[in-house]
Image (cartoon, rainbow, N blue to C red; front, side, top):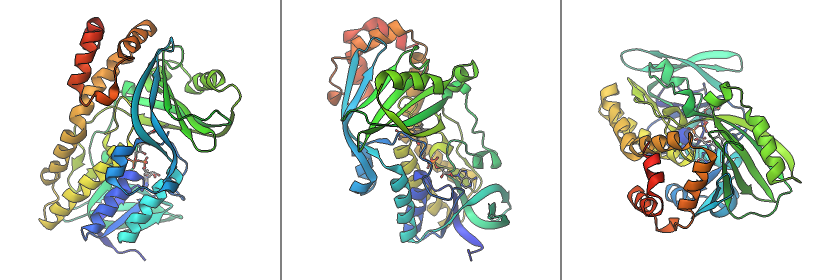
Length: 384
Ligand SMILES: Cc1cc2nc3c(=O)[nH]c(=O)nc-3n(C[C@H](O)[C@H](O)[C@H](O)COP(=O)(O)OP(=O)(O)OC[C@H]3O[C@@H](n4cnc5c(N)ncnc54)[C@H](O)[C@@H]3O)c2cc1C
């Protein structure tokens, strides 16, 4: 039988929720994670690529969580000009990784309910209750703070009065297959071009056993205009891996836009629910994990001081702005310009970038300096 009241109830046991739970119990908070799926991390709706350096800083990842180690990213323009971005990465096995993160939280002392869907919030002066529906039973459990870690289709924010809506151009509609029987690849690949993926891109993330996550994302406004991501992906795979066989199919949305507020009285949002995905890469695993840690730390402080108001929790909002959204706002502008470029402009951009050694590029000003030297007109265009 679960307790009637917890310090934190975390809705969603993805990477963001599990990291929030682990950090919070390690700070002596009582935590319940509520997960609607019957199996944590399944189905996988992700290409599973992360930076090795960044993940290693966050957690002691084990070999069984890594499907493949990669050496970098090959980005291809429509005329196949290649830009190589080096940097070691992991292609994770998220079916195992997400469950392991949840297990780490449980080992540290968190409780979990799976097959339990949060269906609403009830707020009062002192605490907040989460309405939960599980195996046809419905009940309310109380907390000091609720953390919404409920992913891209988050509803926790809406229940708390936070506007989590994004422009259709800032939601990528994705389809992904696992292709088997492909050649051995040691880099991820990204393909741009309006013929391949209008205003979006296709990706290949190699996995163990000569398999790969092969997917495509296109902004939802283009999908509404009648473009089929599935048809574009099938065409791309036929060209790139004519002899492969498809062994798994998945789909999902990536929220690449930003929202202004991610806290309300007694409520905090983390991960995709807080819309903190990198707008260019669509990567959200690392950001999600980091936001979970930050949210748990601020929640601990707020509960200790007996102040869980929106004012107090806005300290978390400021951390997220400094750590992710300040940069993401700039990246979003770059993305909005790049997705309007013609194929010829994409080719020109790739030609300008192809000889740049990205291992020497540590920041945006250095990249801009390089771009000015190579192609000042393209830089002007990118300024929008
Ligand atoms: C096709 C695709 C490819 C991607 N590729 C990459 C990539 O290569 N690298 C990368 O870093 N990121 C990638 N992403 C993004 C990445 O998957 C997300 O950013 C990441 O999973 C966010 O973690 P999260 O914990 O916030 O949310 P999620 O991992 O989505 O977890 C949310 C959890 O909440 C649960 N939940 C939802 N609603 C409720 C409810 N009402 N009650 C209880 N539980 C609920 C869900 O079942 C889920 O388990 C990709 C996304 C897609 C769609």
